[in-house]
Image (cartoon, rainbow, N blue to C red):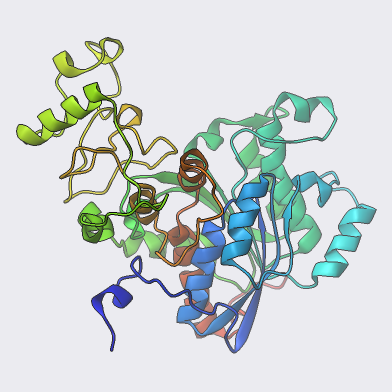
Length: 391
């Protein structure tokens, strides 16, 4: 019998078999984190009865790769390593020995995805990369595209990446220019995940590149924008109100006495913003973070989930009905992760909070690939469009 829980995408406890399907999509996920983009793409493929093959996933943080491996057991390679280990060449230059070897090992790649961190772990030694490591990491994604020649490229980042510069040029503009020189169709936009079915107001910058014959990126963004999916906090976590557990993911955060007093005042007075007189001195008067020490509303999305979701002093993270901040389970749901996603490799509350707070909402990947797959279904499984220009 189909239950309400099984129909709700976040309440599903049984992980689907993402390796089953008549067609196969091969994926490389760089700066993969725990696998939010991979998961979203896998979910979209499953709806269309297609299979996911993870050829390679890489992240600098070993704990992130442990979580990734636990959730994508079929992945061929999950590596805790710096990206430059695999893509060590310069944009526009011939492939290095390591890059040629990797290309041969991985074979044909359909999709290259990744979310370069704002602060990088670059070990490249030239002066420019040392000065601005995060820009070098962003452009590593472009070098990876040059090496692997995928059909689809998704680069996810914070909106502030639009202000970053590399050698005097905007890093996004440079990436776009180089991908166009490789004959990709390219478009980039800032997307609010609350329009993709995520119960939070997080905004992300997406650079999308597709080969000719695939859906033009500007059409894909337009389709997503024209068909918003909106959910409030109650939809995401309303069923977790009565959950009591000693497990790390469901354990309620413990607040100090002064914060307990603040939360109880908000509940007793049915208020959502703390008045100045009840705030810590450093957050009174001209403070610019009104949401800090604030209470969430059931009828609205949450604010952006960060690793600080377990403390009301880090943002509007107070539960709508209870004098506590969010549990890790609630935060994962608000990030868009279903209950079957396994975070148990995280050994501490802090590690769990960082893993969830840094994750990419899966709905970003699923929304994008849903449009790609619909376009392919119309034009043919190869994505070949009758109106496509010759490459």
